[in-house]
Image 1 (cartoon, rainbow, N blue to C red):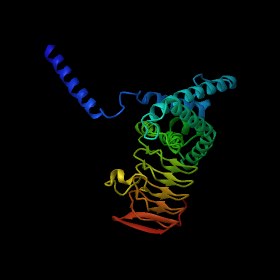
Image 2 (tube, rainbow, N blue to C red):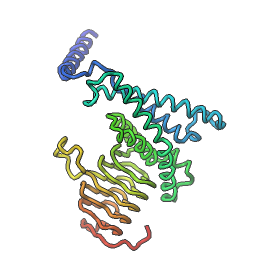
Image 3 (tube, one colour):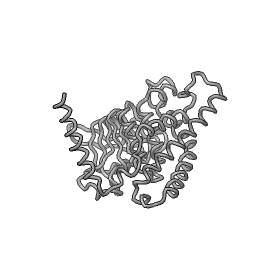
Image 4 (tube, rainbow, N blue to C red):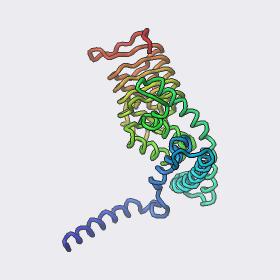
Amino acid sequence: MPIMDGKIQHITNAIFNDVLEAHKASTLFEHMQVDREIIIKILANLEAILFPAHFANQKNPGSYYLRYEMSARLSEVVLDLTGQIIVCLQKHKDFKHKSMEVIQEHAESVVGVFIEALPRIRELLKKDIEAGYDGDPAATSFDEIIFSYPGFYAIMVNRIAHELYKLEIPMIPRIMTEHAHSRTGVDIHPGAQIGEYFFIDHGTGVVIGETTVIGNHVKLYQGVTLGGLSTRGGQSLRGMRRHPTIGDNVTIYSNASILGGETIIGDGCVISGNCFITSSVPPGMRVSNAKGELQIIPDTKTK
């Protein structure tokens, strides 16, 4: 098919020439690119490290084998994560002019700090599982939540990615949370600060923005958005509080939207489904949507 061959060559040249033009002043071709598949493999290994009895390669593993596999997986995480951080740092404004020795030393240091956080991440996740079990009468066991709840998987990935986000690692935390987003329908930015005993029931359509702060014992249902009021300012809004603060012991029902960096939902509030909230709510209130208008009354019902 000579005509089609000619078209293929023409389109290839057109796109490639545009790529060259777009990146002629950059270092695009000077370094390796971050490998999304390796990052997903890192997540799979971390899941098996945090919950080895559930995700071991060997079924019904003995304690000796389990310890060996965990150690092997952790070694692989260290190697893979260090390599991917090195790739990312080469493009970072603070490191792109540094020597490879400096970049590698920093990457190794960051990975050391990260793996030391894993026992603490596991403790947080155990509390999230407990919150899920206690808050969902359909849950039959902790194991069911670990194996099958999309909200829990999204929370686990976020807690992992958040540690790397705090260490100012570019790209990798967002790739991790976007993988969880594609798998679960739950979109949590790695910058979001989430307290203990957090549970997302059902999960699909939940969005939690970068500067969101969530307290302890918070429960969300499907379709909840904790977002910004407007993104028209684009990059000028970087670093500013754009997303709400949710207090302790708050329940937010399906398809509610809570927006804005100055919006604070007080402790103990219950937000009914389909509410659209852009201003703060005092503690202990029940917010409902009746005939298109918000009603805010003291909550006297059992949550």
